[in-house]
Amino acid sequence: MERSVGIKILVLIGKLALSCFYGTVGAILAALLFIQLGPRKFFRRVERPKLPAQATDPVHGQHDMIKLKSSGVSLHYVSKGSSDQPLMLFVHGFPECWYTWRYQMKYFSKSYRVVAIDQRGYGLSSKPSAVSNYAADKLALDIADIIEQLGYKSCVLVGHDWGAIISWTCAMLYPKLIDKLIILNVPHPAAFFDAISFRQLRRSWYIFFYQIPFIPELLFKSNDFQMLKTIFYTKPMGLVNQENLTEDDLEVFNYTFSQKGTPTAAINYYRALVRHTRYDLQKRIDVPVLIIWGCQDAALGEELADASTNYCSDVRLKKIRNASHWVQQDVPDEVNQYMEAFVNESSTMK
Image 1 (cartoon, rainbow, N blue to C red):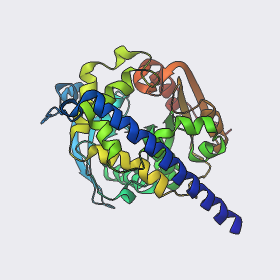
Image 2: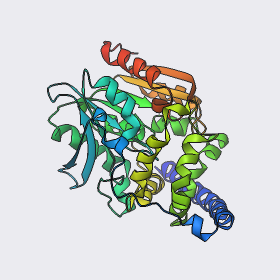
Image 3: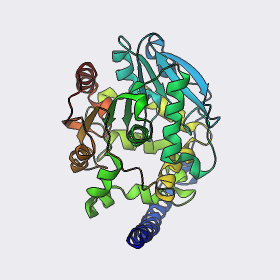
Image 4: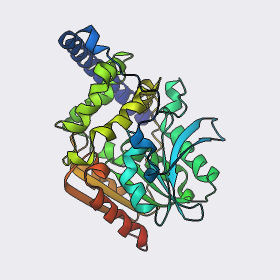
């Protein structure tokens, strides 16, 4: 018991030290960008009063809202397919929205009712103010509620980036709700700590920068969300196959983050990760799991994918060498093929 408390204290000290260091570095970078752009360009914003045409195309499905019974949070979602088909539920990451799943929704709507949500804090969904409202267990409860309230007992759950963290958590807390779990480019939480290294901490610097107030939001919103374009189109994080994310596609993400409160709410996911850590969410996953990993991921090392298989009883790992962190947009055909093979096969225990 004393050892456990001591480890938690050391971890807390480490978090504080890294947050102070990278917060200072990030603040300096923001100040330099302000000087480079000038006040007018730094604070430039484009008004986006309505959804872009790209997002309202019926090919993607129908837009709707749902109020969750446990929290009262309302989530925006897009669905396609018939209600008598099994449910495939998609959970996006940062800095994205439901639209990141456009290729998968179109492909799988022939066999599933596909539903892609805007997580709490994003776009048209509710934006609770407290950081604690973005803790992983509360976000996982959102997933449990939406499965039930859509009229299903279980689903195929698909998560990428932050959506994958929440999907891992949901599989630990509500395994009966998940028939199969598909994870893209985020490790099992316990695997992250097992494989942690100084190199990975450097890669994850932004987590600690996001702990400081105000400045991360200012930097993210600067020059009309230029950061989004940088993230998706330039090295080291950009897509390998950039033709799969057009300027019109990018405008859907710009619209999402131009909604009042979204930048702060999205960054609060990272603040909650550090401030409201659940050390007990390290459980082995017993539902069948497919891990798809784009190996050109500048934020998360490939070794984390390998480590994650140790926490799954029934797992397949598919690595895609010529794909970025944004794997489902970068190589959609290959991702869809792996997903389809997985959902159609019988599980075999490891």
